[in-house]
Length: 186
Image (tube, rainbow, N blue to C red; front, side, top):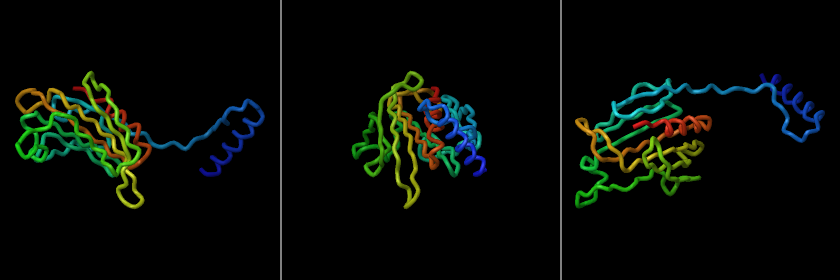
């Protein structure tokens, strides 16, 4: 394979030199990375998102409504709650809950970008950053919060909040994470 790639680079350089156009040389053969296939999932019956087909059905959490999909390369974690059912760890000492956005990338994160956008017509805040997990492992984090949204409390749709975090180990999954965020449908 290395010989084939080397030959294609030499041929492309020769063709580029012969043309004299000043353009980048044409690469005839490229090593391809396998693409993740995405499938639309409806994990809780009131919203959908694209999920890589290699991920198993979502596991749920005990303390809040939500769930997560996980592989060695990527993790998709989502949670939601109505304002009155805000988890206790997010309330202040008087029992009041926060209605404003919560962001995931901390002070130790690198290359943090935060912007406001609309996802499925809903106001959202998206944040992306890189965090050092261990000495040689960097993890890309993509976080979306929709602070004002009708969410299910199990019986009816009420005002609440929706958050989703996608963590990727491989650089090739960055675009997949962005597609998953854009695929949210409420």
